[in-house]
Amino acid sequence: GPTEPTASPQPPLPAASPGPGLAPGWFAARDLDVLPRPLSTVEFAYPAAARAAGLSGKVELQLSLAASGQLVDIDVLRAEPRGVFEAAALAAFRAVRYSPGLKDGRAVRSRSRTVAVFDASALAGNELPR
Image (cartoon, rainbow, N blue to C red; front, side):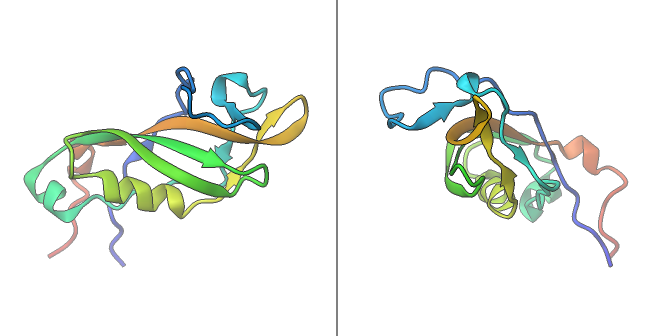
């Protein structure tokens, strides 16, 4: 059947300062020896209204992962434009399992940032059949 156009996730960005809210036992991405990674492709469903309008955008997310690699929390840090791509980005990252971040050879709880990019120009030729 027809497939939804997808956006591509960018590699995780080095985390900025974790800020005052980083609880003990959590590691920022910059403090890890091995970054957590999705175990399968993160596939984004391009929002229909944004596709029809030719809108592009990006959503910066913070992922909080347990030592098992399970996603325990996800937050939108920034979105451009606001209110368009956040739901699709959240759903895509929630649907995937992750390998845990490693510190000194052991799996640890971690927080890392990533950016979901929605590129309308990549949709050309991928329009769904009518």
